[in-house]
Length: 365
Image (cartoon, rainbow, N blue to C red):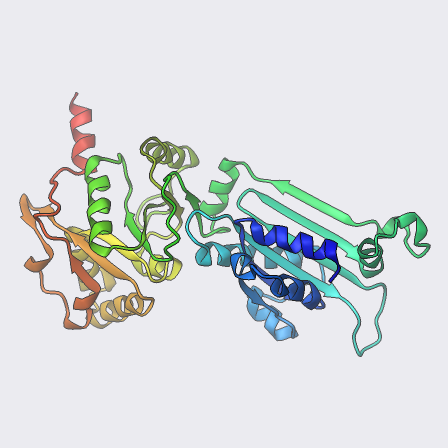
């Protein structure tokens, strides 16, 4: 690696962006460069090389047509970006990179050696197609006019698309991206474990803020944040304008909010493995009620044990249930799940007000 390439890699590692790379067909040298310069752990979260045909099919969940194309590179970059969201530290920019190339092989090669690379961030998609001969000219710092083999058709075909906030949220609602983080909090701990209070926050109130604060003090190290699902289990999804209105509440109080598209906790556990979810006792009761699992007790156990296997736990605060304040100890938790539910003592947190009650009072004014 020459000095200029090393300087470029050092600059990449100095950036807070954290990346997942899906590389197929001849990108090993570029990956080797990234890993050979100190600081690679700051940048590279994961790298996968789907080298065989079947590996690529399983990665994408479909047969790409063709395997070497800009569309395939973009599909890989989007998958890598969603993976980077799950693996990156909260609040750090995530990047997905996809590369597929038609390079030298043992079989006869038809046409020039061409590769496609794509990069995806929260607000941008960038793709480029270039022939290997052109890439060599770039690497050697040879102007294109001095490379006779290069024709107008070999000029890199670059494509860039910017996404505004509305488009990003539409992509989330439609399931193209798995979540979006708004890191409004000025405190950015590097703890990998998230302490998540999920809700509709219509509106956000003091009880939500206090509950997350108390839960964070009980757990100690962790990254406290709120989570709102744009998709509801039994209602239409929130509109972009509704999501943005609720996001504004967190901006005003300086608290981080994650917008996801998973209304069920077993799916949230897959999305945020190792997290501690902060819930009210009314939610805990629903979680262990077989009624919500087609009246199947074994299915309920299997689902929650699946959450447990991801390293997730539930911190449970007291709530008013049928006009009576209840805490976790009032309910019988299955033995297999008891260590998964952690009570928040009533003396540390008690607030009977709810978003529903606040909305009702406003309607009466």
